[in-house]
Image (cartoon, rainbow, N blue to C red; front, side, top):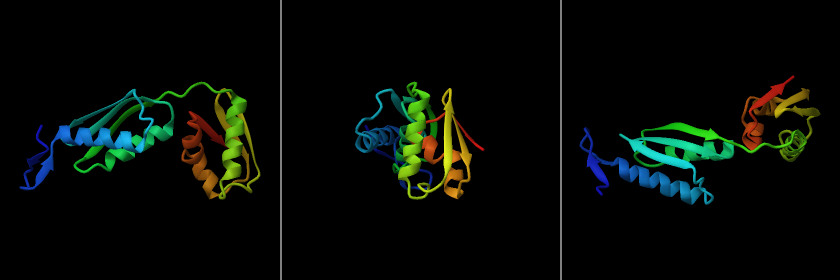
Length: 150
């Protein structure tokens, strides 16, 4: 297996197989519980991630790891998040705990309700929680399909 080729600029480039091996190796190193249903392929320096993971954190982390590998020109994310069904009350408790444990949100007076895995926030919130409602904090922590901020 050759690990390099000469690009149009005369510089050595990694082969697709070497890039693929490096991505897989880094995923295993960074994510010891590397999802067995995740598949990596590489074509012309473009890494394609496919398969399924059980949470949005694993999906995002997989993409970031692949993007950081030398020789990768881009990443196509075809990963599907298949999280297990959780009771609404468990989701609600986890959200309240996440808000309470985050210094940026711990003092906000926000009520949280969950019905059929759809989370609704009521109350006055600051910029950090607004960002969370758009998908970063709570969607990442809880892999929620929908968040509603009122």
